[in-house]
Image 1 (tube, rainbow, N blue to C red):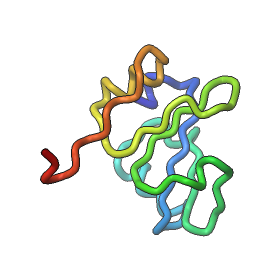
Image 2 (tube, one colour):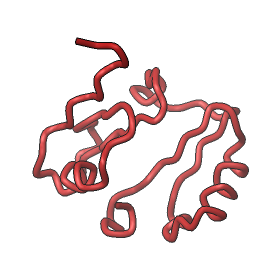
Image 3 (cartoon, rainbow, N blue to C red):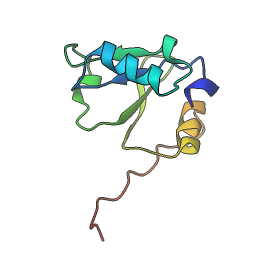
Length: 101
């Protein structure tokens, strides 16, 4: 989705690896837009409200006015993410927990 929305900043966060290790991983796995991504590793602090992310992956969409528009926990289909990036959809429903009714 990042390649289709070049105007949207992308932050990739990993709390168990350094920013350099995460950047290298993204390069090895064919993320074409990796050079414009922002990488945050285990030694870096995040600003509020991003420092409150309790689950990974968490996708946070920050609008042009620099406010959080959506925070989506878990992996979701690319089409759902693209709708969020375009601003034409509500946040997807979180995936049901295993064993949930």
